[in-house]
Image 1: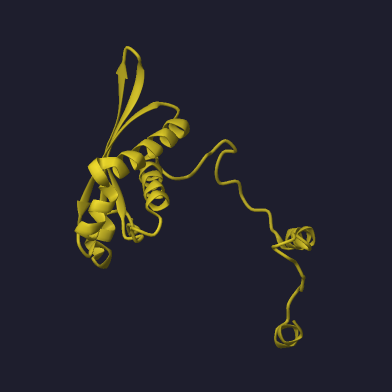
Image 2: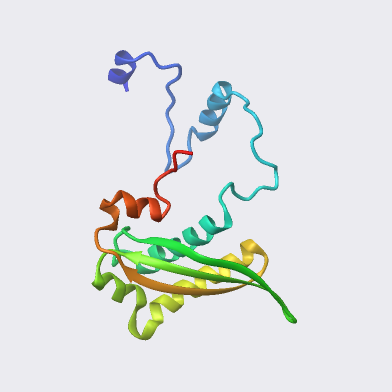
Length: 167
């Protein structure tokens, strides 16, 4: 620690342990002295600043990454094609359709799984969480498509929502 202390002018130097938690309360106290109160950007009851479309796509992507762990690289994109609410005699239903894009045919097989088992598991877990978050019954349909090299094409990145628009 001495070499760092001599090399730079730090406002504070603290010792803490992530393993035991020693020094964490002291760190919190010091951080509060440097914190500046800022404007209140969102209502207190806001869950997120993301759209339902983005949230739904990210929930599906999260389930894919969790359930396939190391089998699928992070080179997947989820695009919500349809998001419509319909009213029935048994209550409202949110109809959602999603395309899951991957870069290789072999990845498509992993995502779908034997007799569709993996895709069903992904969709079921995503649907369950969406129903909790959106507070409405969800009918989720998922399809898997291969689009080789999509991560290296600005057009595909923009289409999948990974590039910010210049508006």
